[in-house]
Image 1: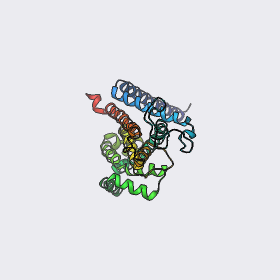
Image 2 (image 1 turned 180 degrees about the horizontal axis):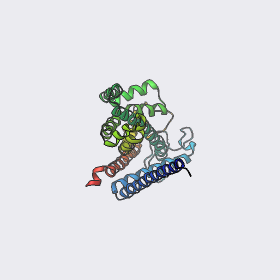
Image 3 (image 1 turned 90 degrees about the vertical axis):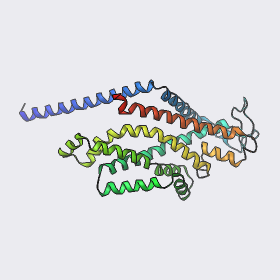
Length: 309
């Protein structure tokens, strides 16, 4: 074996050893997070509530379409809760329980999808604006400020009105209008990361901007992104509920917001049909509470100050 081949083998072994160390550290980090989360009672409560709603949303796929078809139901409208109708009936005689279960699908889907879009935009803009200090970073920073100054709800209403009433448009509207707060947080964290010595060493070794952002900045801001994501889902669900209640949601989709809008339009309050509005309202509150509990627990666990306390 020549000296060159030996050097190549030693370099490959060193690279594999470094990868094994990284994998071991990531595995240990995941195990610490899981152990800490199990010890957090509020986080477990939020996770339990969320899993219940996810199970309800999955079970809603097995609901016969005829049971929610206003032309095929035979029950009387505005029946109060009973053994036959646990959550009563709506103005068309449909089971409110089945409506709420079906609405969980759309509300959770919009919440997760819009949050993913918001996190992608916010994280990308935050990292780029924090890493580049020149014209690029300045322009992105001003754009973020512009979105922060504009009131969120009026902007979402205008965009939803312009784009039209569809499920995809609602996801896009919520995602496009809710990213500035995330971008501001990620930018502050990026500025902190770029000032660390190992970024200077990476630059000295010839690493490009894309390599630095992908390999060094992104892994360091991911805990903040993860914690902020769980909190942002609840905001997305509330936004979907608000837009659907205002009549800007998909008219063919059943969501908790559209149920509330239907109950209000049908005069459920004047009819004394409190269950028609209470059921989807309680579902929204519990889901938002669940995500907030999970988010707060995740934030506490990933807070680096907890390790030194």
